[in-house]
Image (cartoon, rainbow, N blue to C red; front, top):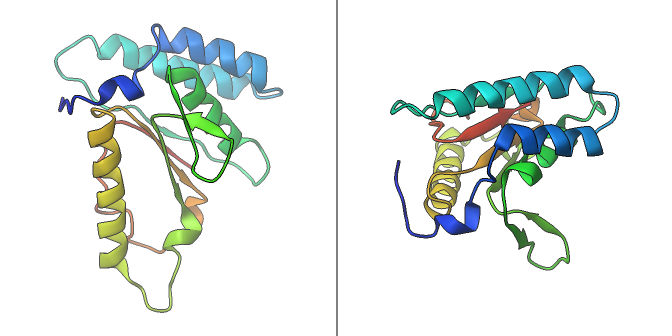
Length: 163
């Protein structure tokens, strides 16, 4: 894994699955089966990450509007990262390793700027992973709004949560 020297800013907590379980149980109501599935996936990733072949964990969190997909992804990131960063022009603090792509930012079907979208996504992802020494929770929110082939060039280096 690549290490930029800045990774302390995006350090994972010890025992990620236990922290995610506790944080989700405390802050997310009515989604017990989803919590169980997410925690099980993180436990399996923790077990496999002790080997040399460290692969990213990719979760597809799907469902109708208003069922808590975005909230769950934010809570997962809050539980996984030790540090938070302040958003510019806001008092809000978010997990240091959280990167969010919004589907509506890649939805221009009229001019269809796929190459431009590929460049934007790869640049933001590469900068984020460099800053965080390869550790991240990447959320693609409202993925159904993204025009076809926009995400084809995305290479997963980290946790990626699609919904």
